[in-house]
Image 1: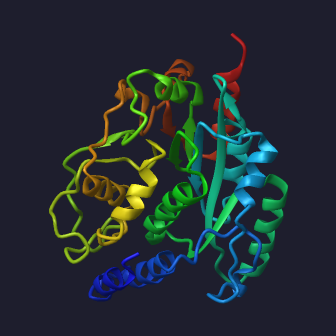
Image 2: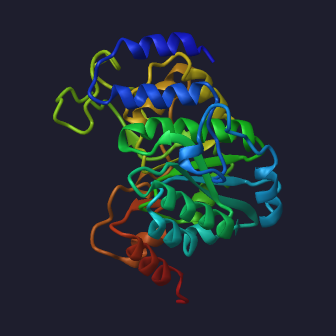
Length: 318
């Protein structure tokens, strides 16, 4: 996977977050990831990690999704149990939409802190109960969101190539699956080389070292990012993950995950598609109006409880 070249380029950078990125990408690029939550964090070593080849088959057999039409991949911090449970009781509970099989999976990194062993045990119990957790051996932090996304892409490419479409969707999102599946089933929606969501054009690279979105010139020398989709939720044909992973061998990693995916997509030679109705991918809807939530595909919410409350109202009989 061109490990040597990427590791060499990483070693030359000195950004405030580069140590975390170096460590996690080294793990990613040496294929020591994609773990089902079956081991304590303290046990993760290159020698003891095992990869259960049949785990995804077990998942889809249990949920009767042998050929999922759409896979929803939710990156989430290990401690965000409330967010996961809110999704499980709302849009993540929808396994069939318009006759198409839909699957929701959560990706977490390593638990950290003084109580990491207890937190890992809790994750394992949650996994046994719900069978929807993937865990990878990188430190789960904001600066490693790019790593998290690339693990998602690699998992989709290697473990779930039979899906038609996939979506990376954040854990604080409302998702209207009826509208999303309608979009994906439309005759003019491409089945290959397709990625759509909330379009981000001509976005400048932040050079202010005090900003959480700071990216050094060493990591990304261009003054503007290529067109990309806002990371809150973007959907893509499932042929793209493999191409994005391949592109990542050539694109130096940086910590703005959605812009990094945009850079990989550009490298592949694919242009993101504006959705037929751009208003269906909204950052915020403002004051609650039921009709707005009936029209959108996705939007950011303020809390897991808000998702539950809005979902109940949207789904109530009229």
